[in-house]
Image (cartoon, rainbow, N blue to C red):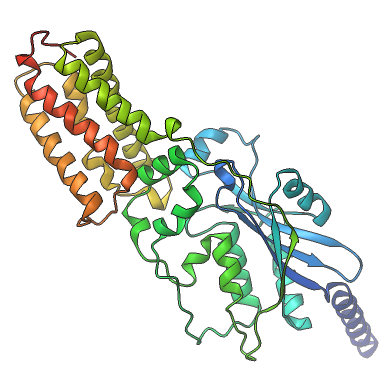
Length: 383
């Protein structure tokens, strides 16, 4: 009786195992999608495609979030919005990129049957409802890094081999994607802290889909075979991103404010001076509150300890009120802003200040100079 029972268990396990191998001995590939024009798609996207022997053609996508999530906007800003691994058909996945005219490249992984089964099982278990959600981090835990980690864990990668990085900081890795979006470039550079000015190693730079694509192409397995068997473009479009118009750029906008401020000051245009100076002071104060919020009240690791608070500073609120300490506040702000301007050209602080800050820094410096001497003007404007 016991012998028959053990035989039954053995046959059951053997049949199930054989069936599992027959339906999971598939092709596994990594999909790399070109950047889009929405802020959440500016840096591209990565996903895993699995073609099963039974005909299923599925895409495992770590980049999904729910717009219907309660408190979506606040959670998104705070870095608390849960991201999810979802599974969809290849046809449906490609339709989105066809619609938005975004090219897609496919890298077929050079895996044996055991490695294919391991990576497939890992993704399928991860896609279960109780496992699918994860806490997204822009630099360290996203759609690309999740794929990197799965590949390293289940594809027998030669970890003893030294792979060279591109020698760039996280911030410099991001900059090429922002060239045609000057306002977004300014905003991201203002929000990101000195943590992004650390050099990214070979593994870390794979937080960007393009670098995941390139670095996977350099990986070797322990059997000295290349990880990537083939690399081809399966959807191709010409980049039709329009070049930015200088008249709509931050440099033009803040340069115009600077010119208006100087003209209003020297030609005693009291109303214009009050409007421009008040808007500038208010923007600086609101910006400082935003930096403080992103530092202390969010889970974003890349916005912690932001040195831009040196020059976009809560002290600006005191410029709205005339008091005996205002001159001291102005002098402190002028010193901090001057230091920040120097840091743009000769970096000595732990955080890089982008060239896009120059016009704003000049505007603030001129504003502070006029504030020191405005009582000598005939209109003596009071902000």
